[in-house]
Image 1 (cartoon, rainbow, N blue to C red):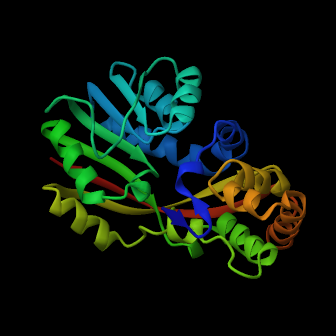
Image 2: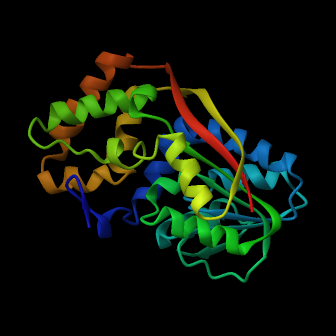
Image 3: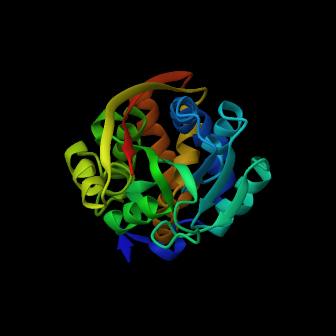
Length: 268
């Protein structure tokens, strides 16, 4: 499978989690992780399953916000599991495919997922698996990015990619992270899997980056766009073009910009 010049089997190389964690997590993901963890803690869960845990930013927030709960963190990618288990050793880590969860029925009272559902090839199938492992009355809590236009950092990034690649620019961010941005579609998929949507909110938070250049490095080396850059074979020139365009739009930094997501809570 390919997404705009990106080979799926090269999406997450072993060196990518470190760049993702250093440059992107503090700016883009931690604000939403803190929000999602607070929402999770309010449900007073005892057994939490996290899907697509990545490097563990939400995992750490869950361990702090709900210290009495057992947290099982999973990710499809081995490199992410290795990195995350070292970062957040208080959780139980396991490699797992969200569409074929290796857990018994009714094993958890809360399943959480931060910005991972967009990556599931069969979302209804994955949601059906989530419902299977939830105890009766359990909750599924997750967020998904809004449209690309509502994420100022990634608008600037995409403009930079289009400048660096005038012909066939990578469309990964438009198609995947921001490709599941219609709340009505998400709600329909949840209903098809047997969930009842209890709450759906649009949430805009501010990301704060000390350096726009570092943010560009994070996107170009810590996400699947890296494969497209490597395939073109001119990484320094691409980085220079993307950084220049992002700085023209955002400034060199420090920079603060809005990011919009949708948060869903569904009952099994």
